[in-house]
Amino acid sequence: MAAVGLISSCTRPLMPLLRPGIPKMSASQLHTTAGRASKDYYEVLVLGGGTGGITMSARMKRKVGAGNVAVIEPQEKHYYQPLWTLVGAGAKQLATSSRATASVIPSGVRWIQSRVQKLDPDKNCVYLENNQKISYKYLIIALGLQLNYEKVKGLPEGFKYPKIGSNYSIHTVEKTWKALQDFEEGNAIFTFPNTPVKCAGAPQKIMYLSEAYFRKTGKRSKANIIFNTALGVIFGVQKYADSLLEVIQSRDITVNYRHNLIEVRADKREAVFENLDKPGVTEVYQYGMLHVTPPMGPPDVLLNSPVSDAAGWVDVDKETLQHKKYPNVFGIGDCTNLPTSKTAAAIAGQSGVLDKTISSIMKGKTPTKKYDGYTSCPLVTNYNRAILAEFDYNAQPLETFPIDQSKERLTSFHLKANMMPILYWHGLLKGFWGGPAPIRKLLHLGLK
Image (cartoon, rainbow, N blue to C red; front, side, top):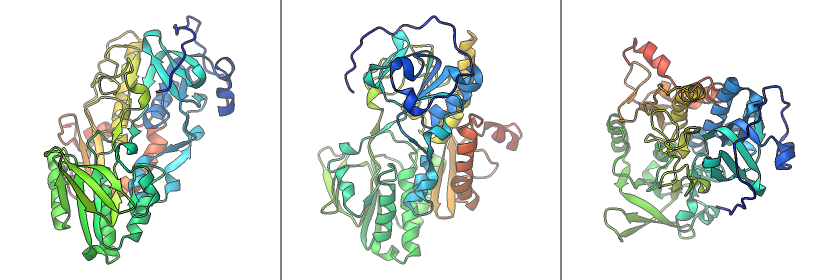
């Protein structure tokens, strides 16, 4: 983390809160100087312009007025990353997954185009680039997580070579499709790292799609498909794991558990794995195609931060999403230590609860709405089939529809490929979609 010179202390301003009606500034105006670029105090400050940040800024706009909400986000583009599974398999175009950040920031909400360098929750402020200081009354941390390709020896420079890709990065997702098209014969290897990841189903979704592509193009007999995962199970929810194991068996896919990628020798097309059950034991695999799921972790700014736990994740109550130490600080999404899968669906469920939590805190009341850990992972198993996994903190199925969602279905695939992007752009990011709980209750006649 870059060093920050603390020129003055961060105290909470006592000035009256400004109300809506302030003209929206352009990005160039917003970071000229701390005094002229934007206000130096906001009632609600949101860190991060990803899924959680945009969703909560939309909700907070309705709560306190647009002029009293600011989002700090450095990137010019906002991406719907769940679509990248299909982009890497050639089923969707990358361009359809992105929109300008300016277009998804709620109208009137201030976009501060900068990076957070330091959080000082004891004094209710954050520091940005050039030591710009922004103070707040309430803080929502939605910084996502960080891809750490460099923790695998030989990466990211190995992506300059052919036959290797990764659906997790804007820079490498199209390399997956190129590697898939260029595959001739040998091992097609798909990895899962020994760290928390976002969308834990994605590493195997591209494997199933690749297997289907090989069959369609007549290359299946020349492909040895291998899933090397650092985990000890194929999926954390038994009901869906059983279905996935049936798919794996029927398609003659090899799964090696407790195998963690530690090195890529892209010039030789070799991948080196450590056996986590046998310390010091490594295995070298030749590959004709390699899909890398990188190690992931909290953003650098959260490491050793007062708002984070020992591992660097924002330390929040798992039911209310309120910070365990700082009552005016909240967290949502991938950057938190919530013990559930890190997905956009989880953020949807969290956003509705966090909205209620913040409302209660603003009114001086104790939050009562509780997040149950709901998350979802549409496990794409073919170009026209998916298993719609939905579950809670206890790894128990929490399904929306009154059917067995562990079965491969065309409807589940279309939900993933065609309906969810619409729901994302026009429902979730607008702050109107808090997950399918009301639909589930209706379809199950109030029994769930």
